[in-house]
Image (cartoon, rainbow, N blue to C red; front, side, top):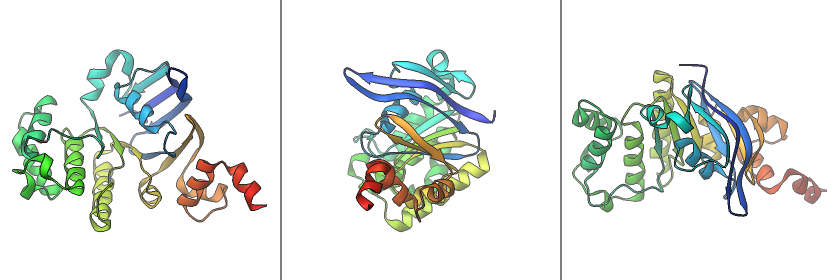
Length: 250
């Protein structure tokens, strides 16, 4: 793998009069977890949609794994995957059926064996025969994560990967993802509102507001730069506008 697995240059997206993403550029390193952070409406979901090829950019270029996503999207996506608790799998299928469908879509030679192995890893074995629509929110989150790992991706895009999980399970999932990344060298782009999660998992952070990347760095560097104690305090400064915070404080 090259040192940079995602390279975004001058990326913009306009929906009518709304500029959802405004001329952003960034890179995601191989073997690193990069956080994409910002408040609601900052442009994170639109950015991820463009990375996946689900949203057509108004301007800019995306390269993933050394390929131009505009021309070679399908070749790239064989080695990538995505997870979001807000995207439902078909409710009438069982968990096993859903995961086997995705395993076959990715061309796995032994789809059932892969599903069974992931079920053991993610404590889903007892859920395999249950219909996905009958699962709790936390169970659906774990199934979504299994779907995202089905093809052992080199690039993993995660939107709120521990949403709806209790603290113990969320902690276990974070550890699992970190081990997966360290063992495989995969790159992970993580969108999360859980700043403790960001501090624990992320090597790099991109901070978005109103469609633009307005700051970036390691969690420790950003905490130091803003004179704060935690990433949550940094997030609030940026989401609200640092100048506004300083004005209020004075």
